[in-house]
Amino acid sequence: MQKEEYRSEGIERPEDAVYFKSEQSLMRACEEKVILQARCCLCDSGHNLYVDLGCMRGYIPREEAALGIREGSVKDVAIITRVNKMVSFVVKGFAEIGNQRVALLSRREAQEQCLDYLLETVQIGDVVNVRVTHLEQFGAFVDMGCGIVSMIPIDRISVSRIRHPDHRFTCGMSLRAVVLEKDYNNKRFLLSHKELLGTWAENVEEFEAGQTVGGIIRSIENYGIFVELTPNLAGLAELTENAEPDRYVGVYIKSIIPEKMKIKLAVVDLGDPINKPAPFTYHFSGDHLEHWVYSPPESARVVEEKFE
Image (cartoon, rainbow, N blue to C red; front, side, top):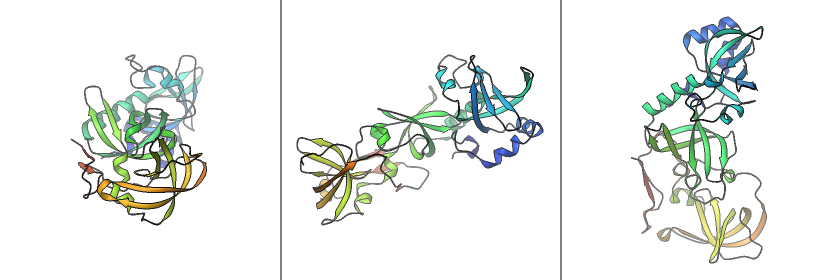
């Protein structure tokens, strides 16, 4: 189970403000070894970070700014890109820098604590809360806590295929994800998302033959058009002139065939190109998955995932 103190950077906790009221309050945070968050306001020419603590500035030396900087396994871009963003840290003490009294902070130590906790407690199949940090063609990078980054590969985001993660997520979005792999030696996790979006049967419950519904064209093949009805459910329509991927479309549901896991559609109307990620709903609300079967019982083809 995730601890609230190891929350993702950017998810603020109102009670943190209590420690920013005075130097005495920050001293208490130092004694209690509390992990706090505040916004980074400056990265100087030596790649040291300055943080706005309210009552004073906080100073994070370069080697304390990110886990891996000291060892050389992480590049300084991981520091530079923290400007104007929330950072996690522990208070280590106080010092005078340039005739200004500052609090000495360590983001690295907060990350070490968080990573050790995750490696010790989080198991394959556990559902964790994460926050999207950035998106690449091949997947979504997410913060598991205190800036510890993992990835959701693009083919693990949803059953319905997308061309880029920004068709599903936005930076800063809070998500739930399931742990797919845990590499203790390299201290890394790999996550998945689609298992939380429901099975074929759970998604198809929303529809019935004879309805006309909205969807999104996700791909066009020589045998038809794949239309996403929900992130974990797509149907096939006949080829239509002027159809383009990632465009809204109105479709008539001709038939639903559980035995073949198929939905036959007919395009009724072409809409505008999509300009924001499609909404999604979580069908799984638990905190652990051991076995997920996407395919319905009637289907001869079994689509499943075992978390072990």
